[in-house]
Length: 378
Image 1 (spheres, rainbow, N blue to C red):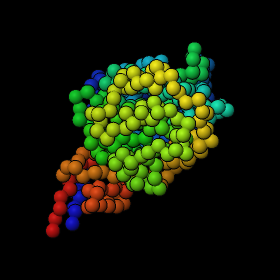
Image 2: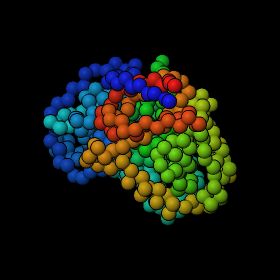
Image 3: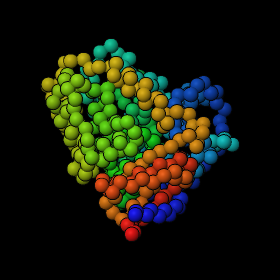
Image 4: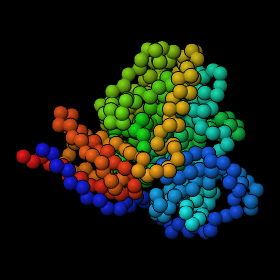
């Protein structure tokens, strides 16, 4: 019989930044225009600032779902990692029900929506935008900051720059990883998550590199490499590195593109290339002359986008009890520390002796640091 004991305490983010107190003046005079995006604990709205007469994006974070120091953490990182390819923080405010981050408005929307809006999508264009994403990541990683939530919803496209470019958004899960063995539990859907986010082992800058590989796979094929019928099965596929390049999806994709994806999807984070090394890969650096000339299937990519819009992490948070998550941890040690768990109510714990895996089914309530100890009895 396997017994699991839990200890719960509040979370403290590791950071080497000097965290000044988050000063949140009263809400500025804003005209709310429409909602742009709904996340797990926030909604982003396009607003017009009556003072500056400028349109901005305002992230409203529900006070019941996140604490002030968590919002301060995101604001602090945004201030320290300013870059043209990162959505800029313009100010922080407070209302009776929400904390607000006033952000640069990127009007052209999400990258994948932009890609499917064109009649013809070529592999070379995908390589261009993967390179753009890696350049933004390289700046973050130079600051020793890991994004930890790299997914299609957080890749925006700016068409007003001299050339179209990617802008990374939503640094709510980002952490400074230098000198810390930080364990960051997966939140939301696992499709783009590295094994260490699922297994409860320390994250690193290369955690983001895994996500870039999955993004490249999706953009080129329109399908998700590890997706299965349930969250648990998807997590197991990720941990086992169970993926392939089906001919029906990759017949028109170059070998260089597949080689790039394989290089990023190592189970061992230490064996993954850095973002800087990825930028030197022939497929990304434009040194490859063998980009496929076959147009990619945007119909599959459009279907992928529609499916993602139905997931919990991009739908309005209207009923906390309706948000259920599943975590699969491979038991490689007797004690595992998990942080950033949006849970206080565990519904069930399943242990698979043959695969040495444990699954948690829980309801998202609040951010906790959870420590559990596993041992065999009887």
